[in-house]
Image 1 (cartoon, rainbow, N blue to C red):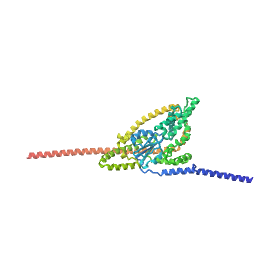
Image 2: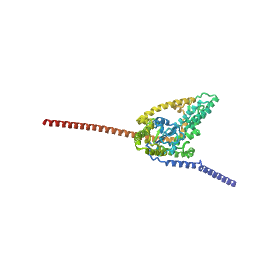
Image 3: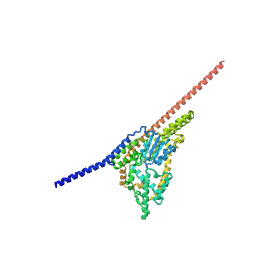
Image 4: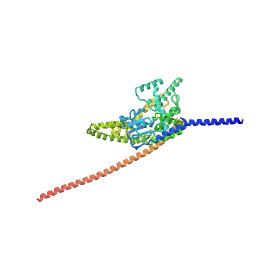
Length: 501
């Protein structure tokens, strides 16, 4: 018995040692925690070492608008940036979010859903980055709603095959659609297939009308929100999407190590702190960080921080252009040849300098003696039209899946437990958003201080100018009186002399 017991003990120890060895190999091998920790740390270290040399508060030659989906960035593009920058100054195919090469000679504006890894294709010291962040829970709702809205447009087709063929015909005509744009090129087809499957199931079961009090849980019509947030596609693209995009780690990244780093962070939650640290530093180095929830303040700040600098650059370039045109005819063809060589090499190493932009290439706003206040008026007028168009299109799309009519009131019907789950799934974005709020508050204080100082200087200048003008008038009047007195005196003396004669 003792011998059997001894053998059993040895067997247990061997099994234990084998288990430890297996666990150790698993953690140290590829995909294990040790391997993942090393990969993530290496990426984070190399990312944090990249310093921005230029003053981050100064608008550089290229403006990169890193558009996080569902933050309202498209209104900024149409109602701010397209008023400031002429289309000829946009990087090629800037807003279709395809895989682009922005190194165009006159490239001054890049607006895209591409993540921060795009900076590897740009000249960092000549690029200013701006972005807008949104409350993570609201952004998840909005992404879900937009995925459904766009997918529902295809329900005019009799079946999925017909809808897919139509999409293929559009692409063959080189027409850019939402299906070509990240992340919707993944989310919309997924949702479209689901909508057609549910419609076929209803027709098969004879259910034509669905009555539900919760538009986010009408499973006969649309994938419920709780299913959506737990799907692997949503976990890879939607959750913590802002953090991964600012860090440059989306599934659309230009970095070769992005997939491994993102996979490791999704597998081992504790490694997310390294990504969050990098994302925070990226925000610190940006020219402007807006908040969707603080719409009015964000837009005003954008007009004052970005708009005024862009206007200043472009309006300042007009006088330079006139001066260059005047001198070019005097200096002969040798100068033109020299300028051609310089421009050619410059376009392959950097972006067009503001002083090289002709008046024909300036945006609408810069041709109208625009100020920050006037730019805001243009913006408000523009977004009212844009929002009306978007609202009408949304209503028409959602009619096809009624009663899944998404509204703010409908969101209140979502359970607290589901909201907590969304919050937990987006813990990195929650922390990044809090950090962005601090940056926004500091930006706002700086803008108010700048405006106060500017107003004071303008006021002092006006007072000095008024005082100077009054003194100048007094002196001028005195001089006139003295001169008049001298003339009268001389005239009287001559008359007196004539009388004596």
